[in-house]
Length: 117
Image (tube, one colour):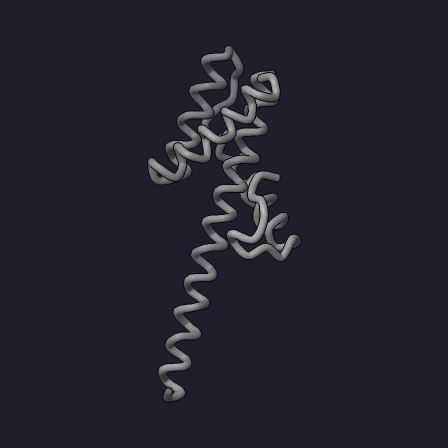
C-alpha cells in the first residue's frame, strides 16, 4: 500500500470518528435538554425517561435542533411555562457543551458506553 493510500484511509477513519462523536454528542445533548425540560414540567421519573427518549428520537428522525427547539418550546408553553425559543436555544447550547465535555472526559468512543448520563 502506498503512502497516499495510507493517508487516504487515515483521513477517512478520522472523518468517520468525528461523525460518530458528533452523533454521540448530539444524542447526549438532546437527552440532557429533555431532562431539563422534564424537571421544568415536573414529570415523574418514568414519564421523564419516556420524554427523554422521545426528544432524542425526534431529533434523529426529523433533522435536528430546529425541530427539538420547536417541540420543547411547545411542550413548555402547553404546560403554562414561559420560555422563549431563544431561551430554549441557549439551553440547547449549554446542554450540547455539557454533552461534549462529558463524552470527551469519559474518553468514550461511540458504541462503547452509555449516552444516557
